Image (cartoon, rainbow, N blue to C red; front, side):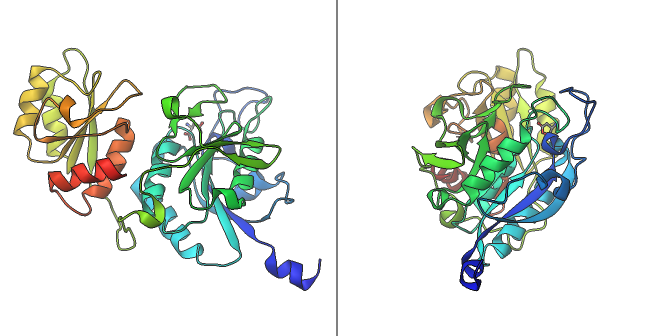
Length: 327
Ligand code: ASP
């Protein structure tokens, strides 16, 4: 390779955080393994270096259920600094699938770069028969290095499909295509390393986001309270005392009973109404309580991410309503 070629060769930075993709268990089995065991170098050792150069950095080795604001802020700050390096074309984050969608959406709202940031993981540990991690990682790297993925915000790549961070969600407990986007679908696909994009995100993200985490060490506390038949409203009251904001996972289009209604009408912290159905939109005219904000089509766990960021700026309900309509 000539000096000229060396100087223009770009690289992807792979940030590892643990999860099943780095999981190790009994040979062949898909359950009962330990997540986050493989080191960053072990995880990436069989990755073909043909598409782009690779730099690897271990952020943590966690089951993704143990990932929250501390790791989100670490990732956002790391990417925002590193993205300025001209030889870097994009980032891949390996992550457990359980909360991949929350990390992806947080980063979508807080990274300040057009360069692709792509999350991936796997449903089967590295020691399973037909483990899905290697292919997911390879395809995520292909997307991170593709000019077609520039400016699309944070993405997730899983089982040959490309999703926007805002829409991606875990839809199943064990299928290898458990990461999807329900009714709004994928942005594109990867086939043999080639990237095909058919849709683009329309909501504000990355460079067009007004959220700035550069000075933040913690995030406001938001809890999600799930409504079900005969749910105890005192649980909601207790949660509210320990929170800066509340997200309700309501039934249907964000509904709940009289007991919940009474408590919500009395609360003086922001309350966002989402749905426990897993799909569909909630609009202002659905709202049972006037002092609440509709989550649009965000599931409870993503409404909580946006509300936490919103609360870093304001407690004003009109402004929070605007965030939920623009992001
Ligand atoms: N519990 C694992 C995690 O989220 C599941 C997975 O990665 O698929 O870390």
